[in-house]
Image 1: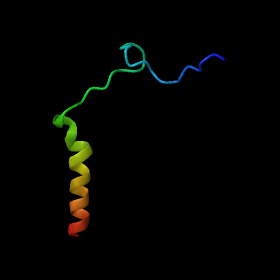
Image 2: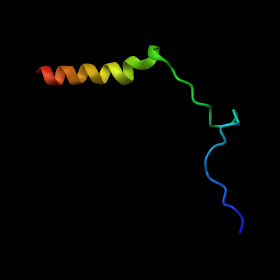
Image 3: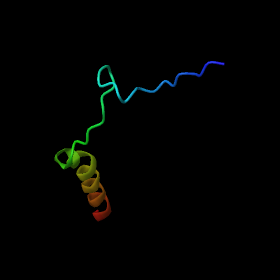
Length: 46
């Protein structure tokens, strides 16, 4: 019986629609961390 090929991207290949993950760092953290924290603080404070 042949092994089924998984439908996952090959992380060794850097071309195609799949790109290796790169950490954007804290310069982009304000929108995914800061905005929800500000909204939660405003909601709890009112």
